[in-house]
Image (cartoon, rainbow, N blue to C red; front, side, top):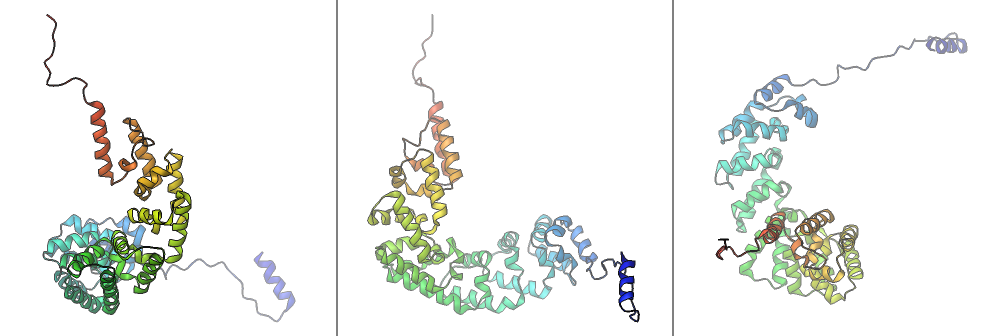
Length: 376
């Protein structure tokens, strides 16, 4: 085929110099090789190299890499060999942080962590929050000082740094605006100033990402709910129950969810508001999820009346509800005729509930303190 193409070109223009074409192998010289020094150092620390290659192989091709320095820092803080290996497997990018950056991070975090042991525990769970770029250091410092100035305790601040590091990487002014909006909203809705600090700490602890939202979202959502008949005290109750998730909603999605819930429940607007106060899931779940959960309960034989009595059952996935119904049936409890309250709660709560049912079923019918009758 190559000869035919060459001959054809020559026949068209005999004066043209034809350069023969030859298949070329892909050049491998441009593929960056692994940093063997870093790989060997990780291997000596008992890090699963194959796991790192599979998930973040690019890290192994970087140079310089500070494997021994990273391990020494963690070891100096009291981390065991297994913890060091686990951290580097989970977040191998740590070896790319310069020693001076890591040391600055340790000093920064120790300003809110009372013990190095606590910091090691945070790094083990959230290594990406600790091994951050040096460009974020000034913002981190400013945000720590700000949160301390509004009397958030250091335990809350360290948890916030671990779970929502982006809130510390951005300019402090953005966090100030959101905190001020939350405080103003709390007071405007009737909250007491002497309770505001505790309320704010709980809100941030339950949903650290609330600070990453814009204040206008909170304002617009509360305005929508007020227009739908919720009083100030009810809005404060909702804001607390939603654990800050109200900032992640939007009026359009809430409108669809409320309309769907009212239609399937066949209730009045006043009744719907009371149900929402008990089960805010009707606000933040989209129609698709609500439809699946309503249909799952109805298919299992539950009536609309029962769902209205215990709307919090809608916070459970359909799979969990089906499993719990079957589990209760095996112990003689029929959720179709009994209360749906037994389906609620955490896994631990439910296990305790059906454990009591099991004991009740297995309890002997005779009175254990009654004298036994024997044959002569």
